[in-house]
Amino acid sequence: MKNIVVLTGAGISAESGINTFRDSGGLWEGHRVEDVASPEGWHRNKQLVLDFYNLRRADVLKAQPNAAHIALVELAQYFNVDVITQNVDDLHERAGSKNVLHLHGEILKVRSQAGKQQVYEWRKDLNIGDTCELGSQLRPHIVWFGEAVPEIANAIRIVRKADICIVIGTSMVVYPAAGLIHEAPRTASIYFVNPDVNAVPQMPNLHVMAEKAASGVPMLVNQLIQDQC
Ligand code: APR
Image 1: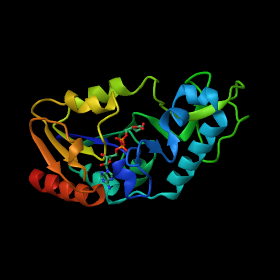
Image 2: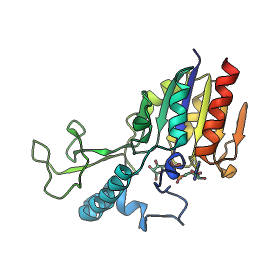
Image 3: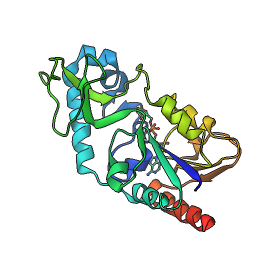
Image 4: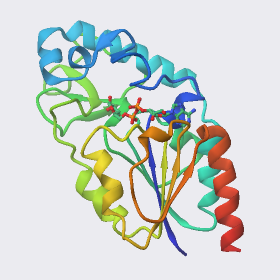
């Protein structure tokens, strides 16, 4: 079976009702990114950061996978599929995808601010005073700006084995995630699904679908399955 690597960003969850990051004038739900998604922001105002992610967590719990998440599951009947997502929601998993790597963490998990060992599943609001068993304040299990991306080495290893790469709904501006596509073998076919074609990188073997994910991804999946049969 051929290896397909799917790289997803906020755009794949947009039609599930989860807002993207960069479609609102540099602000993220009315906040400067550095206030709510950086270690400095956390040290400055923990309550603001907790309130912000509590709302994001509630949004994710209300959302449902859309036709794009679901189509990717069908692809796994015909190909070895790995999903590498920048998203912190669990919509790929809820749709039924098995191999999902979260580059930027997961909103339904929290961890100790003292270290990365104590990670817990978390579906309710997180408050000041919620601590790990060693007594340290818990924080969202999210990779913030200025922090290392622990899963990047695994992601590079996966992309280097791709026969086909599908890039869905990312503005390709946040590194190191945006550089992953350049780790694909030169022979790999690259498919890019995004209604905004300005985000498209210049690459050989590139096929651009200027479509929203919920319509473009099922079309692409059908095409790939037919080509395979
Ligand atoms: N279908 C497909 N793509 C869409 C859709 C849709 N329905 N709606 C919007 N898009 C595209 C936009 O054109 C844009 O290119 O999704 C992209 C969203 O870009 P960003 O908001 O920048 O999201 P992303 O690329 O995932 O951001 C990367 O930045 O803030 C950080 O850590 C955060 O993981 C995030 C990272």
